[in-house]
Length: 418
Image 1 (spheres, one colour):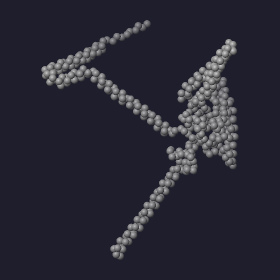
Image 2 (tube, helix red, strand yellow; image 1 turned 90 degrees about the vertical axis):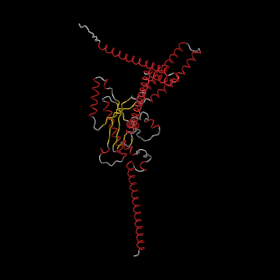
Image 3 (spheres, helix red, strand yellow; image 1 turned 135 degrees about the vertical axis):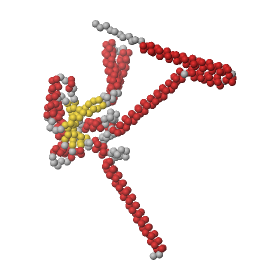
Image 4 (cartoon, rainbow, N blue to C red; image 1 turned 45 degrees about the vertical axis):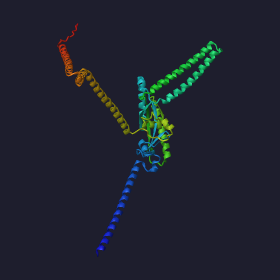
């Protein structure tokens, strides 16, 4: 083979190898892109499924969606005065109980309550759960009702006052009739003033954020698996669960009445309020359930912030407080140093004046004359020496007075004893 043929063969071989390399690179990029897409799909499924299962939930901010929130809340829905859990495998019904003031009862009444509660415990044939919920008393609605009723009383009072004044000036009524009208007017005026006082006191009470109220509940559960292996659909299981829970709740209320405790079964709205208060302890006072329903919310979501966000907010507040304290300390330190410097300058004012006077005399020596300037500086130096000796004498005198005071014998006070 000639040299040209060998060169041509090597050229074709290099082109073939280059094409194979490019094909391999393209395959590698395609596989890599496919792997990244698969990982993103798996992560999206973990966070709550694809776009169809997520619905209208927004997961772009924190990765939360409707499914993850429902999973956190541990219940599916509230239906027919029951809380449905675990996809219909557990049903709950709640009894609200009114407590009794046990401490204010007599010994016989306390014994009666204890015996009634023992009978209640002995009559239980199913598990129960006692739940105590502490709520902040929201007096906003009460204040609004008071103001509305007081406005009605005020309008009636103004109308009665106008009628009384008109009747008094007309001269058609005798003294007894006017006195009766005035008496009714006085009662209405006292009622109006009393209503205003109630509103004022209630508003002052609402300023205190520690006004708390405790609610007591008994939770009764039912599992459809208690029926055994039966072929019931979901609607039939729900009806059976409702009948069983209702029977258990009625028997529990009857057993509790023996100890003086009254109870009632919570309806669906009360159950929603109970769950809303449980999941939104901090925000329930500001953004209550009634406001959420009035705003058009038809699903129950938790509005409470994350614990980490609360910690960050508390840490930011602590940092701000410490920064303010440090700034105040530094400013006070600098201010104290400047004041101390000013005090020292006031104390040494005579010396500073003398030294400045010497400098002025020295600068004006050609005009004053050498002898005059020399005598003037000597006189100023003499005054400085006298002031220095006076200060030293004052210090020595103070030390001697302190020593004399310490050498004096201390007088002891003796008391006569009988």
